[in-house]
Amino acid sequence: MNKFKQFLASNKQSLILIFILFIIGIFISFYSFKLTNSLGREGISALVDLIPSDATSLPSDLTPQPTLDLNPILLPTAVPWDGNERVTILLLGLDYRDWEAEEPAYRSDTMILVSLDPVTMEVGILSIPRDLWVNIPGFGPAKINTAYYNGDIYKLPGGGPGLAMKTVEEFFGLPIDYYVQVDFATFVKFIDLIYGVKMDIPFPITVDPIGPKPPVNIPAGTHVLEGELALAYARARHTEGGDFARAERQQQVIIGIRDRLVLPEIFSMLIVNAPQIYSELSSGVSTNLSLDDAIKLAYLAIKVELENIKMGIIDESSVLFGDSPDELAILIPLTDKIRALRDELFPSGGAVAPQLEGTLVENMQTEAANMIIYNGTSDFDIEVRTSEYFNTLGSQTISSNATVENQYQGLIIDHTGNPYTIEWLISLAGLENARILVEYDPDAAYDLELYLGAVWLNSNPIP
Figure 1 (cartoon, rainbow, N blue to C red):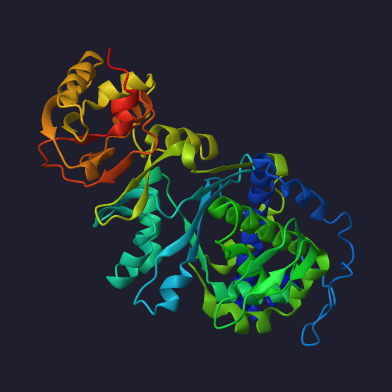
Figure 2: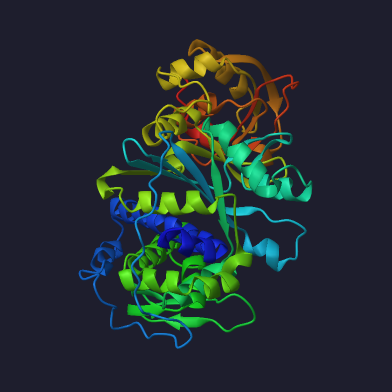
């Protein structure tokens, strides 16, 4: 048995964890670095300066922990990945609020799809929002983050990760080979093991560490954040910019992790201390990656050139904002746009939905959604005139109704899934703030219900 095999045999479980974390750090940091630069938001450009210019020695801000060995080691060359097929991994993070509420099962809070082509050495990475409204196999339309919960609570084969993988597979038409799930506590411990993350914080911020702990004020400037503060900084919601600013902070933290992981001394330290690290972190990491595959993928990942990393995010340009039947905020996928993004990142995929090539009006006509229109305005017959006008544009408006109560103004109810028609309705007269409610019912008398309100009354294009 050669030295490399001896090393693997004696540290098998420990190395699975180390290489999983290494893969996550490499993949996600590349994605975040490119995406953050593309956003161009104020203060984010400073992140470029955080990339170490010298990776041959430990930064001065690192204080070695006495219980960990920092002596570098040289590992023999790993056996290369021997497959030619694309390898796809679903990265999962669970919802802390479910844990805090002692729920019997958890929803996923983070979904990132990572796919590597070992032939072209290209990587595609896609961030999937938790509120995306999709079909959960066996459960019907729901938020994508509930797939993990349903898989766990009903003890389905593969549990939460199994149903999450199946849901993403069916929606995107991509076979998923592996999943990796890391919880918050493990994240905190791992940040501490790599001696924190170095952050250039552009503005003062108050963060709330998890648990019964007082808020912490972090002034603007360069700081090395320990695990708890790094997590609190990434999770902070109640700041200017809301979820968009929160996403930027998360990307900062991920870049900070990447900066630590690319240091030879840090990575060597993780390997040398693999048994201790496994003991401390293994309970917070779940995966179906084998040891051999984890090692091969890690060595393959570090060979991918930065320019061969393609990334994307399903954002407001690819969805409509709506409400579920139980009045939860949801994101209704614009399937043609998501499919185009999917094909750019992961060539040779299927599913999602057939991509329509026509204009918005042509695609609306292709959907052929029948519609009933209700009047919630002071104009006694505007629903009739609107119905007639829609029909001249090729809409399948087959009925109109008299006045309804004002609280229904500006409401669109979709029963059968008609994103093109909804987008067309919104574009007609500035109905961007219309409330969209998804109540899936294939047996409904109408595909869509439209409730006219003051916005339509004052700015409709009816001749």
